Length: 483
Image (tube, rainbow, N blue to C red; front, top):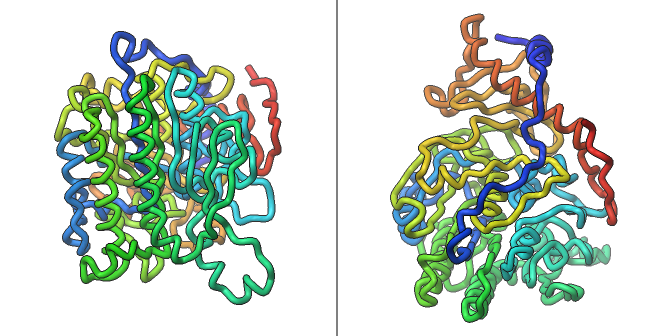
């Protein structure tokens, strides 16, 4: 086995340079054609092992025919990686930056300013700048205050909850009522206006909200398709986050309880959106993405499935990092293609920028890489070979090709910092997908050089572009990047 300080010294001798510094987008794919619509469906705590096409479906008591059909019509990734928690993952998707850069590396627990500063450039801001209509319907979790809600972060309109479904329990808690704790409301808003509160988000609304998210998504697509504008609609559903309670129309549908019923509800809502795309005759010019923010919930009775991997969210295990990812763009992305190449969620930012003809920001570190050629079938290889694995503010591992170098022990509860290993462990994820048998001995250290180079480059980039501290108020002015 190898020791981290020794390898860091070795890598430093190579003269690490930050590869994640900001860059301009290459020639847009859509330079001579109509810009495609983008429908980005993000499930909440949906594990790798839930959809049928990923080994779940009927084996989990919940068939997912519409998601499975989408996979057959597009491309399915088996090594799509995310951050380990809800807020960091959503931040990474929308900014193309690892969440530690934006001060959003952990789930906020209240009592202070949370979410993205308005200095950040979201996908919605980027695409608005090149003529897109934009909307967000669902769970935000990137800011609770006026000024940090979706309508102030590039979205023309939004509907949903500012934080998380956990809070649906609060209105029925006598102690919370007696304490006068303010309860989270479902909200809606439009660009240039203040968002307004609708119903209290309680257990009844928890069952109903995904149906309303679907209805509003379809209404937005209908309204926008009738105009000359392309659209980007970000649809962060609330299922299957705990409490995993299905809509009354799906209660008892499977005979296997609330969780299975909720997965079937999820599949039905995806199907409704796909049907609306067909009915509007925009299928061929609409990119549809289906994915999840992180691995599954670990607590009974809402325990999810990681499929062939081990671990749950809030960890550096593959069960936390790998989630379903399906993308369809008829006539552009080859149908039925499956790849185990490494892709990270930050890459969607840079890829959509290229496809839409937008320029990525040049004044900040951008971690996403352009995966357009890979997704369009022009290359069999992903445009990345690895990435640092962050859990909150800790770099707990590095993935490189089929290897994972781990710096922290995996045994821990959610809220207690994990134990840092005396010496790292190396796992071959092809021969040891459950990360049970670390490679040991001097012969195994050959796999450490490239992962440690990734780590050194990332740490160097943090020095060049200092991270934003959590709770930083607006307006935020970044320090000048160090040369």
